[in-house]
Image (cartoon, rainbow, N blue to C red; front, top):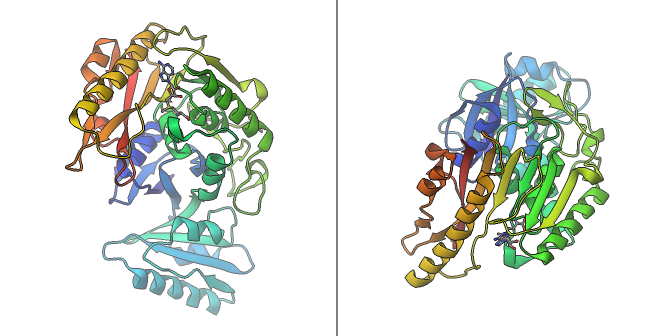
Length: 406
Ligand SMILES: C[S@@+](CC[C@H](N)C(=O)[O-])C[C@H]1O[C@@H](n2cnc3c(N)ncnc32)[C@H](O)[C@@H]1O
């Protein structure tokens, strides 16, 4: 099956996430990528994609005329060269005319641009869950049907409704936590994800929602309590979708898509696996210094946001940058050294480490990859260049590094 992904704000990171899960991904423009897989692609576990669409092999009108009876809602996003609000609208109205002639009742979702925004698609129910609410994506002469839209409301709820939050340790966006986990690649069913800097537990929460087992440790007793509180809340609160308030477990989308777990299926080395809800015993949280702690086994993958240093609201002066680099670098290297003797060969490790904004707009990174390699890790060097995660003007960016134990 051929899929199109509408990429998030940082396309290179979105592509790295898709490639880690599905293999080769072709960047078709700065906004979209194409890939092929026989796996079920579940948008709810992809932090970096805004929409997922499936290629339509027949002509678009043939496809539309076959939709089940009843009133249709139709949206069109145009990603062709030179596309505009006008080209997308013309296309949508052209389809509507033919459908109406054939006796169908059709509402067209109005374009404010060549593409419908994620919010517009989501709130008009165009996310593929309803067979009669369809968004077509046009790329030159090819058409794709949207089968998943990023549930921005669910991310906001997961982020903001958590009982224990702490601005000082930073707020890892749930989307980025998913990306860090997914960059570890497909993992076997029942895999344990370790986050040795678990803080308030965002990575652990997303690991649980995918269906993995979550193992967190943190130096701070307070953070250990926060993570426990947040995960307990997650297990007790369920996880509603934005469309109609049903739990994903009961919402059926297109044929063959088993929405069994809170975030749908997990990719489990070539087979589909589903859970009804994360279970109580699916997480474990302990206090420990990542540079010396002895973790319990098994550890199937490590995904974390390491220590990012002190929060900053201004570009640091040289001396402060130097001390911060030293402090963060030594904790991260100390952790990786400690970890290297405790994980099996080929275990994936993804870490977000800090990078600091310079006055020329570039980011100053920790130059520690050679040392990491010497500790017995393979470094995904090719991907390093593009994997900086930041909002415009953010002083401390997250630099994602992808490792595998040799
Ligand atoms: C940037 S925060 C991580 C936040 C986390 N991703 C979350 O979801 O809230 C870094 C965390 O590393 C912890 N930390 C700092 N030094 C540590 C060390 N040597 N060992 C373990 N944890 C440490 C801090 O207590 C803090 O919770």
